Image (tube, rainbow, N blue to C red; front, side, top):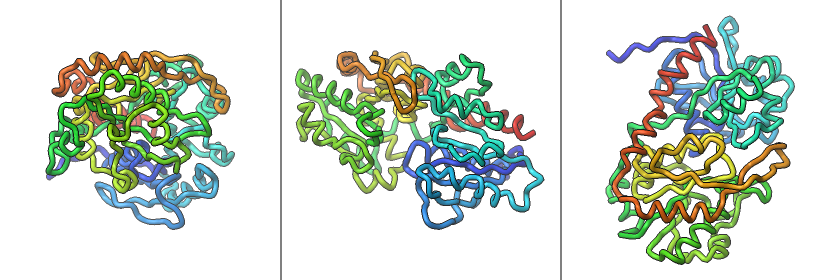
Length: 396
């Protein structure tokens, strides 16, 4: 017989990317709904990306759950109250809530003010955005900070909150020599070259690219000119199809030769690499390059370190608390983000170059320091130590 899990009687509608979609939110959504199901909660997924035009049952570990499609507004907040009401039919006597895993400034529907809401809040600016502060201050909203930085921001304005980080499946994200049946570095077509990898979505808001592709690639170009025995892997969409930058043009502007660059397979990128394949890609890399204007969490930073690959990231927002002692935190310059009435930071190119130089001097074998650091974010550990006590208290 399997382990008996404590059951929690509650109805939860999970608002995010569809569970299992190849996005950071989609992977965290899958981790969460599977464990909610395991502990007896009646769960539905409400998609803002990944399902459109039909309703279906979504198969997850432990059974099937209702899967509601996107709405008509850009972020699908128009349909959340009706989807949640439908999901509760026949179970109106149970405690209930909408659970959000997305940027909270997107929730504009006034009908949401009448529903209990748990918001796992990304806070990726160095100051608290005013639209986010307005949302988490609502009496029906219980905010969960996904990073120590986020908790510090909410604490500073006396907004009650709980800190619970994102999780990583460290049973899979660990040093992984083979990509399917091929040694990882052989699959990546590198031998003794220093392999720099970026795992970042190429999506942007007008001319502001939060993932700092321009600054990161400029730094790589500067480093490569002095250190030609280097290659770059971009786990990203090269075109501007999602509103991001045209990366081949940016690479040319940064004087990075095309023969030095590898992109992810376009089909697998859109439909999802397996976790084991991702672990092999991280393991084959010599360093993860992840500075950005600001992160709400930054799952690739933890995933890479779980495989033993050291990380370069920003010394602000969530990233400041997500890098092990043998990684590197770069400096930056304040940048006003008018849309959110808050401050980002732009990574300093020279600081990134210096971090790459130091990373190149490190041994190639997996870093035990980074692996141990990442273990605190193991998805089962986070669930048992943080989420389970929270849900028992909230619905109890």
